[in-house]
Amino acid sequence: MLEQLAYYLNFPFVRYALIVGVLTALCSSLLGVTLVLKRYSFIGDGLSHVAFGAMAAASVMHITNTTILTLPVTIITAILLLRNGQNAKIKGDAAIAMMSVGALAVGYMLMNIFPTSGNVSGDVCSTLFGSTSIITLTKADVNLCIILSVVVMGVFLLFYNKIFAVTFDENFVKATGVGAERYNLLVAVLIAVIIVMGMNLVGSLLISALIIFPALSAMSIIRSFKGVVICSAIISVCCAFTGIIVSILCFTPAGCTIVMMDIAVFFVCFIISKCKKGW
Amino acid sequence: MSALKVTDLLVGYENTPVAEKMNFEISQGDYVCIIGKNGAGKSTLVKTLLHLQKPISGTIEYGEEGIGYLPQQTVVQKDFPASVWEIVMSGNVSKLGKRFFYKREDKLRARKNMKRMNIWDLKRKCYRNLSGGQQQRVLLARALCASSQMLFLDEPVTGLDPQVTAEFYGLLKELNENGMTIIMVSHDFQAAMEYASHILHVDKKEIFFGTKEEYQKSALYTAFEHSMEEAI
Image (cartoon, rainbow over all chains, first blue to last red; front, side, top):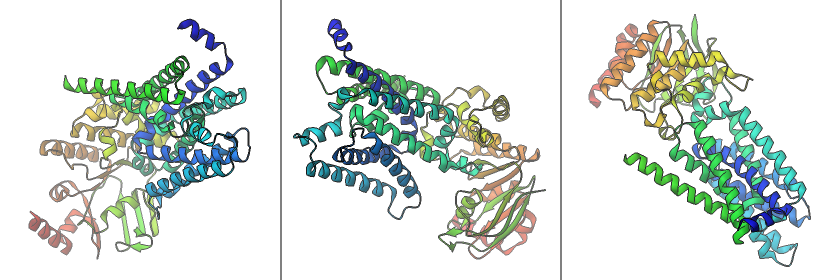
């Protein structure tokens, strides 16, 4: 088993997958806590569908590095959704549902009308579930992922105190005269970046799992915000790492395997928290 | 010295005012209770005063240090994983300005206010596991970090038992005696009449602002007291 693993690790694409996997998992877990607590989970979900649409459009236009298109489109959508949610003529959640299914339909339609390869359903499947794209990463993809994750982590650390204050009590922050909207916007933009990063790893349908599961697991057992953020980062990185290793050894799709790990950890944490309450 | 000055303020939604034009001035050290029936524009006024909503017209001027706000608890906060220390520290957020991290003086301020509220031993405890009265003290300590001059409280005793409520009013009284301006939205008419120095009564047809003694002589008081008795 170990020999087999060592053999696989010789391949650069396996190492790339591990680097991208661990970094994406780390970033997504940092923001996950804020997302869950601010009841923004559905925004993450909606954005990932929009990212799928953008990715489909990018591949139809034969752009080799799809991130060039998906990143700005997803960020702009995030900003629009947040703006709309506040002065809603169309209610926030309905607007998100509309955008996300709309993007999904348009994306699938584009991929069918302008197929880039003989296997349309295979392409769609890998965009949605990230089944194969993780092992087709190029050096450029990896570098981009490293840059984005450094930016996300840096911004998160710098604004940690403000993000915490806005997450816990937005009205308090507004009342004391600090512009809370700015930080909501910052959170939304970071989420958009993370979703685009995560699309390579687990695909656009499963990225929400990567954001939400580690946060929920950590929240059930840890009692301080800082502790929850650190714990969910650890959980997320461990799950991504073991998930990728298992997927290589057992030939399972990487994205799903990682999410399976996250689900397992969530149930363990859930049971621990129930037991604690029982004592 | 004026702690809050409101001039020709018209509050409402989408250019539809919900109350008459308001003019009043609160001085440093006043204890003001905002009372009035539900639906009389009270909560719209409060939101506007707290910058949560834009006024239709008019101006709101605060004193130098701004306000410490003690909001009604939201559902999210009830199971929020944060330690008491983290929450009280977040009261310093308005002092961060362009800085990213808290300074030593911010930490000292948090510590001082936690000791003042008698919650220093709870420092590492998780907020969601505290009792209602303890949670209110935590939020009060946070508000004190934001401003040492003015507190704005939104129905702070909702859901507290009578003993904790009395203790809480005692704390506020003590703060007020030390020069803190207190503005409180209240359903507790009796307590308002007992503790407040000034009353702001918001009604659809008219706004009253003045000392408690003046208020007790007004027609609004008689009508409001009567309706409260009926409700009981």
